Length: 247
Length: 260
Picture (cartoon, rainbow over the protein chains, first blue to last red):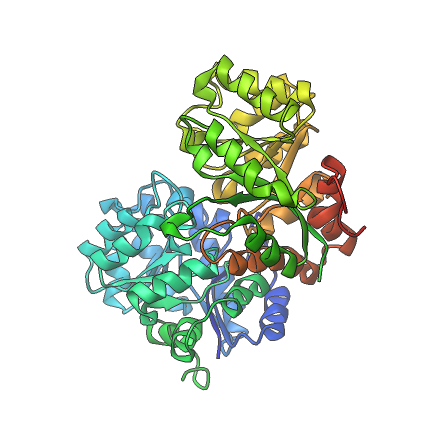
């Protein structure tokens, strides 16, 4: 059982990937369910448009896909309206991307959106690894203000902040770690420090590939229990994985 | 198994966390993954200060493996003329065949005059410069592009293809300057595919950046991340260029030269 907790469906830009391409890759690598996010433009600016487009794609494959909502916090009250609409469309979870949305991960500007997500039991996925705005220790600030919210550290700090990742996770137990772009050996070491129940497999496709992101776990000696947690069980606890796809 | 030249790897004397791989052990691990040659760099020397002992150490530990490891010199750009003299000595008199500078670790901007002289020396000596890039404020791709534009006879290898945030700038540099090469030592398939669409495969190099603890895991993962592009429609000839041919063209190994 494999759940990809982070990838993109986009018509344009660096994250362009069609539904057919994604499903083909999921089939090829036996991925049961994927959590999908919109394009970069839609994350940054055209939130409503992105949520609607994503919801339509997810609706056609509810047994395989879960869609995450986006709303730029600079929209203020309008961002909450966008989130309510996304909820009605069937999306689940909030995606936050500070480099695209123009704030720091620690910024209180995000609080209303995180509270909205928390009130519905949604996880909040946060891009990390980009200095000045998406650092693991900035994520701790956000996570500590919202201890009841499951906050996902996307990309595990993406190499430059590897030294901060384990400290950050220890500072706030509601932080989960998504593994795309992190090396297999780093994930292995972090699992040893934190336990595998806080780790989620993600591909970030098409920026990376399901092939490469799954292959890296074949090179490291994880236990069967750790592998099961990382590849799917943790995600089942955070997302409404379709029936029959759980453990 | 592919035929691979690794254009960015480190040999560490003590290793991070006290675990290092001697050259012969590292070679065996790399050969087991299909690597037939490697541009070898110190890591300890990249921090700056007294670099000569690290250059001597690298030559010593690779002495029995010159058909495999291509030793790269490391100097501290803050040392000015002394750095240039040290670099020229190790290339002309001691057989080193490239320069590695890690401006972040050495704590000096690429815009410092000391870097200018070193890039000029790379051009004079006809050896490539490999830099760490992708990490502001001292290692942005356009900082190195400025140097590459002023020294068109120098081959400048962006050692991480801009990493995750700055790869578009790395690619812009490579589009404008044919002496800029992109070392795909990070698993960003999207960036590599964008480069293939704009500059083709001839200036994309494979690098693992391995040399750390559990290097064999890491190396296997890095090579596979390139091979996985085949599943996205990247042509086999482009993958061969990235994994082997481009590096072989830039730096013929003294013996063996791998399998064509």
